[in-house]
Image 1: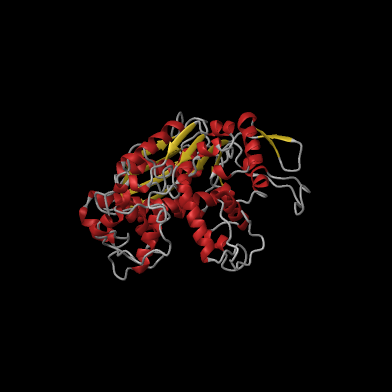
Image 2: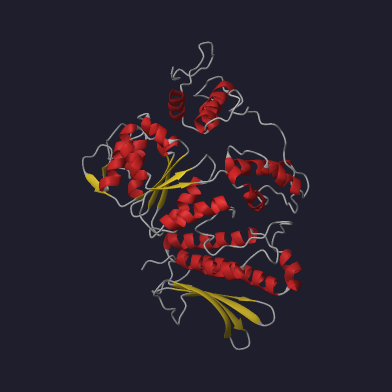
Length: 488
């Protein structure tokens, strides 16, 4: 068994443990904020998986005779905890008590010093949190080492949630719970999943949650944004190519399907796939086979597909822009991700999460968020959803001068997409208006400095495809300098 204590995987274990430590430090620190009875077993599970270990255990010891007075443990199903631990660190507590964090696996690999230091740091934080909850008198001392979050709401992990598998999915609203329950249902299977939702609802986070809860969790998770790749490159990106397949192909290259073999491939914005690539994708779903670009040799892969889109694929299918057979293959288990306006009760927790995560990088420290700010945020429609909220909070953190968060009320430079129509716009109409506004502001330039593609975060060829799709045409009187601008 190859463990996480050697080579690159040893570095990954160190980084992963540091990340767990930082997540504890960044969490709200009120005495009632952390449910350690639920949290510590989950932390042990994550530590064991980072090492690819058989078990992890946290023991409380009486310093006088090293007698074990308390124990929390996690082990793989069917694995008995060994007598000898493979890696052990000890942290001293108050009142002659110490704590021992240990992991065990089959084999005799040594653990790097950096990994031991990371484990000791995690143990120290757990000890501080444990003693803080047991004795209010240590609250002040702990507060000097951990950031204070003021009126931060209580954070209590639910039994069905794990901080690893649902990392960054913040909230406990009924709409979000419904989506999470769908993940719990489908994750253990190999069924294809379709994530449906508006932009900014966290589709990749949900795709990772599906992968982390599946039997493929130890295999790669590979993400591809189909909308960000030009049609001329997406085929070789997905399927790879052989040497000499085209000009510039000086060596063979693996595609994303080969990299994800045995794991999960997340195809974001699946509705933007060209028709010829749709046909190849259908063949992989049906037969598990494909050919690299320029090769006639078939290759077999075992990949689970999680697809996502904010488009109406049924309408695209009826219009002939998306293959019906591919749609039914991908849409085995659809999950609708709720927009932020349908889970407004999650906004306070999201706000505190963004504040705690970014205040150190922005050299800010906030201890108070007024209730009026939360009320103002709940009244907004949030067309950009959680991503838009994150940007609004970061802008507010930069704008605020003291320790109280204040919104930056500078009006947006973009008019509402539905303003001209006088009613609610569809997502496609909003996207069309957004693209057209960017083109007008950049004087219809797609190449060169300050071009519209750069403003939108798109490749120039992708922007041209979007213009053709939406029927956007440059006015004849425009002075744009892009000779490659499509006329339709």
